[in-house]
Length: 102
Image (tube, rainbow, N blue to C red; front, side, top):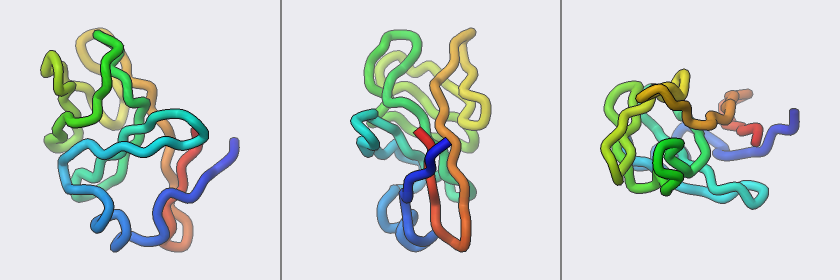
């Protein structure tokens, strides 16, 4: 599993991601949504498993992200919601730096 640097510090996370809003970044050609819910950073594929439309622009509330199109909610820890699952990507923090594996 290869890990890629996302953010150099918690301050960079706070400056790059609006709390409870879905951000977007392309990593190795894969569109990834990033969410900072004020406690953790989560990453998942920028695709709603229901309509195969982008999740970018959705909102986060606690540990749930809402699809901006049909308002389906998915758990950020498990990816589960409405009998479907978001494709999650692991994030790890080492020495204050945030890494993702895609």
